[in-house]
Length: 324
Ligand code: CP
Image (cartoon, rainbow, N blue to C red; front, side):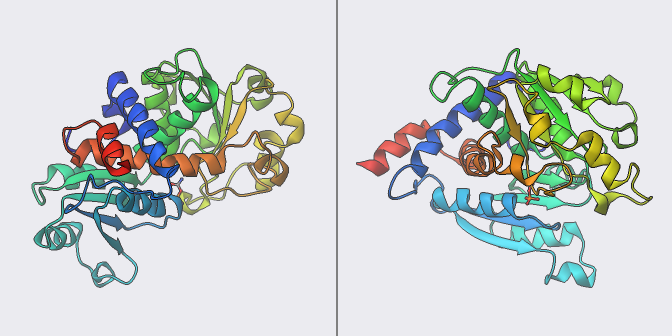
C-alpha cells in the first residue's frame, strides 16, 4: 500500500506486520541515541487543519527518529485562512518536493480525496479526519493491548484473538471508535460499544461488535475498557444526557474500576476530561495506560513511515547498522 487512510484497509497480516515492526522501532527509543538513518533525504509534511497535541508531536518525533526532513504546517496562521483550498495547499507542498503528507482534517474523507485526487504523488497518512478514521490511533491502541494482554515478546506475530475490549462514550462522533472497531475486529478481538442511545450512530447494529447501554454489566467481561471523550465541539444540539447524568451512568471511577477483572486495563486516547468520563483517581492509577499509549504511538508511527517510505531491508538491519 502507498497510503494509510483507514484501519479498514488493513488485513490481519498487514496489522501484525505493523505491530511487529513497531516493536523493533521501540528498541530505538531505549537507546542513548534515538535515531535511525532510514528516511535520510526524505521529506515529510505534517499538514494539520485541526488541533492536535499527541498525534502531531508523535508524528514529528517519529519522523525525526527516522532522520526525515520535517515540515510542520498548521492551518492557523497559513493562507488557508485567506480561503486557499486543500488542492492548492497540497500542490504548493508538492512543488517543494514532499515524499509523504500526514494530514489531519475536520472533514471526513479529506485524506482519501488527497490520496486519490492526482494532485500529489506523495504517500498520504491519515492523522484523523472528521468523525471518520484515525488509523494510527487504532494501531497504537492495538499495540498497547497486545503488549499488556499478550506480552512484549510473546506478542510478536500474534493478534488479539478472544480479547474482550469495551469502548465507552461518544461513539457517534468518534473516529477513534470507528478505527478501533475495524482494526480490533480484524485482529480477532471481541468488541463491545457502550454509550447512551443519543451518542450511537445510525446503523451501528451493522458494525462487527456488540452494543450495550449498560456499562456496569459490561465491566466484569472486559479485558480492557477504553474511555472516549464526549466531543461537545462536534454537537449542534444541546448535549443529552446532561454532563452530570453522563458521568453518573458512564463515567469510570474507582468503584466501577474495581468491578473489572484484576488484570484488565483502562485506556484513553486523550485528550481526557477528568471528572467527566474518567476520575482523576482512575486516570492516575497504574491500570490506566493513557501515557503508555502516547509513548507507543511514536513506535507505531515510525513503523508506518518505515513501511510506507523506507527501504527494503528489515527495520532491525537499520537498527543494528546504527548501533555498530
Ligand atoms: N488521541 C489524539 O488524537 O489526540 P490529539 O487530538 O491530541 O492528537
